[in-house]
Amino acid sequence: MNAVFHVTSGTVDEVRHAISNVENLLADDTVDTESVTLLANGDAVYFLLDSSPLAPRVESLVADGVRCRVCSNSLDGRDLDVDAFVDGVEAVPSGVGELVKRQSAGDAYLKVP
Image (cartoon, rainbow, N blue to C red; front, side, top):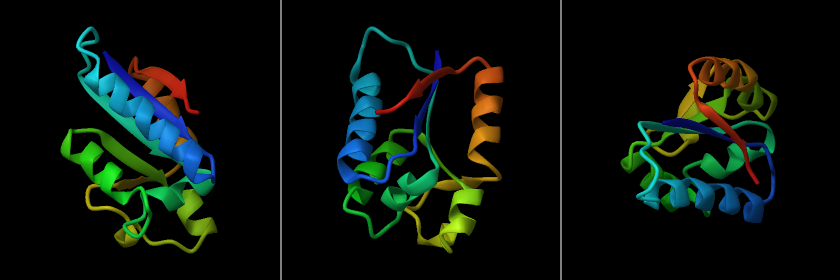
């Protein structure tokens, strides 16, 4: 099973909750996951920055094979460069485009929180 978690919130508690949801899926031995994507757009992109208080948890997700992606449109609108993000975080041309691609490929869609 493939899953894409979509987070847009600009609050640390809500993004922390979203990351917890991803971690909970990975820890659930009753679910066979092939690929998991965490997609951030809007103000949620700030929490995947290398300087974010959530950076260690994002690093752990990347190490566990989670595809962490940020929306280039969101980066452009906030004057952020992808080099400022946790190693392994990738920019995609548009968050909504990535969601459409992932859902078209059969990924389960989870809007979190």
